[in-house]
Image 1 (cartoon, rainbow, N blue to C red):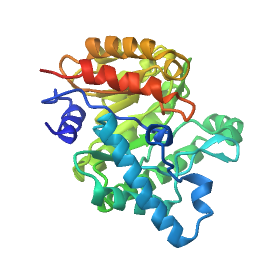
Image 2 (spheres, one colour):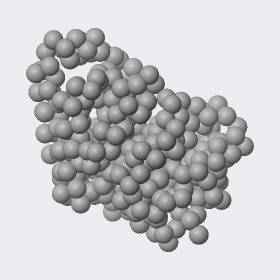
Image 3 (cartoon, one colour):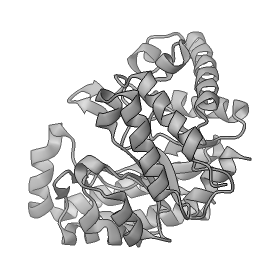
Image 4 (tube, helix red, strand yellow):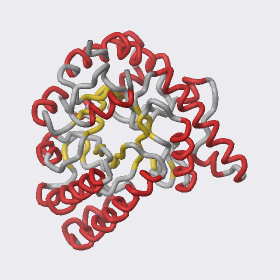
Length: 324
C-alpha cells in the first residue's frame, strides 16, 4: 500500500487504508541512522557553489534512504532559519535558495513519500532577544503587532505557491503560541493576532490543494476549540509534558483536526528502547482507531536522541501501526 496515500488520508481526517503514517516535524539524526553525513546549516554555507550542489544531492540520497528504512510516510525538507539560543542557528536549516533547491532535488528523487515544507504565515511567541519588547507592545502598541501579523501573513501566503512550484505536497507553520503553562496570548489577542491569520493561511493552502499543519509547543487545551475552527488540517506536537492528553484532544477536535506526534521527546532522549517501544505501542493502541492520527515525536527529534531509541519507536510502529 502507499505510504503517501496513508499520510494524505490522515491529514484529511480519514482512516488510512494500510497503517498509521509516521512523520517527524524535524528529524535530526539522519547521520546516526545512516552512518553517513547530511550537510546543513553553517557547515553548508562554507561550501563552494559546486560543493553545495553535490551536498544537496547527497543529502537527498541519505534522507530518502533513511525514510525508506524507517518507513516514513512524509519528510520535512530542511528549512528556514530559527534560533535555539540568541544568535545561534538551529541545525536543521538551509539558506533559502538552497532550501528550495533541496526541495526540487528531493521531489525528483522521491517516490512514495509526502514532502512537507515550512511555509507559515501565523505569528508566534517572541524569541528571547525581543521577548520583553514584544510583550509590552501587545498592550501598548497593539496596532504595531497587528501590522506585523498582517505582514507575516502576506509573506507566508505568497510562499505557499513558491514551495508548491518547487515540489511541496504539504505545508506547516511553526507558530508556537503556548508554553507548558498555557497560551501566551490572551483570548482577545488570539482573536486579533492569531486566529484570523491561521484561517487566511489555511484557506490559501487549500486553494492550492495542499494540506496544512499547525505546529505549536505547549498546553493548547484552552485554545484548542478555536484552533480547530480555523480550517487547518492538522495539529503537530501534542506534547504530553505540557499536559496535552491526546485522548482529550481527539475528543475535542474529532473530525476537524488530524493529530500528529505525542511520543515524549524526553523519553526518546533518556529512556530505554523497551520503554520507548512500550509507550509507542500504548499510544498506537489508544489513538489508532478511526484514523486522523500521524505518529511522531512530541517535537523535533533532537540530535542527541539515541538512534536505538528511535528504532524502538519504528519497531512499535511496524508491529502495531497497521489497520488490518
